[in-house]
Amino acid sequence: MENKTFNPNNIELTEEANEIFKRVWKRVIPDSQESPIVVEPIKYGINGTPSGTTDHASELSFPSSDEFPVSIQEQSNQMVHDQPQLEPDSRSAQLAKVEPYAPEASHYKNDFPPRSAVPCLGSQNLHYEELLKAMIRKELQNWAYYRTLARRAGGSAARVLASMASEDWQNAKRLSAAHFLISGVQFWPERAGTPNITSYLTSLRDRFIDEQQDAAQYIANATESTDPCLSQLLLDIAEGNLRHAYQIRLLIEQL
Image: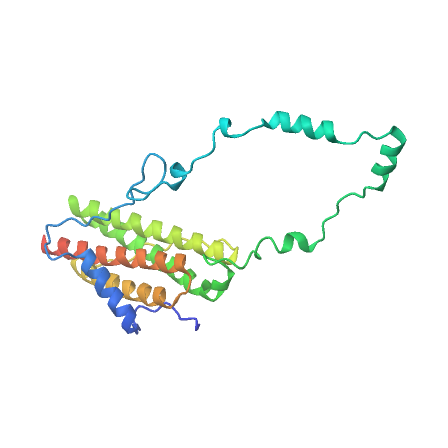
């Protein structure tokens, strides 16, 4: 798989990525603007299993003690009784012939796969290392941008922008964790400086465009990845980008 550079200005989406983009956008922006965006969590029952599923452990039945003709203690006593009694010298001679068990080195090698052979965030994704670093930097830049915009805004707009900044910070943390699990190297760049914002309204428009372009880039990389965990992470961030674009649109409509 070819390593692509994270460049929001040059996006080529496959047909599959376009379908995912449309589906995520439709989920983020429903037909009715008054409808809240709700992500239903998986509900678990008291026994820890998801609701709607059957706890197969509860269906297992074990024989009662009445079904065993002889107790375990009686069987143990019978085995000891039936064992031939050896003379002290004879018993010592037999114990001397017993060699300690020394398992071969390959005994444990075949029990578990190698550490690198894991389907989720394993070393087979090392070609995404630089891409993940670029994504982390981008999320931190967005975090700094929205913090600055929140200081310029007031009232409910400031709270919305501060919440968007917090989400971008969490995205950077999640990407950094994925980078560490893949490469074994913890990456966290220095904080970006305060962006220079001359026009509040123009900045909102720029962010509206950038959020959609970032979402398209995340979706394009998610469709290329064969790692289910990495793909899901990128799709989750893409959905957040589209939600941000929708929130910015509402802020502009309220001006």
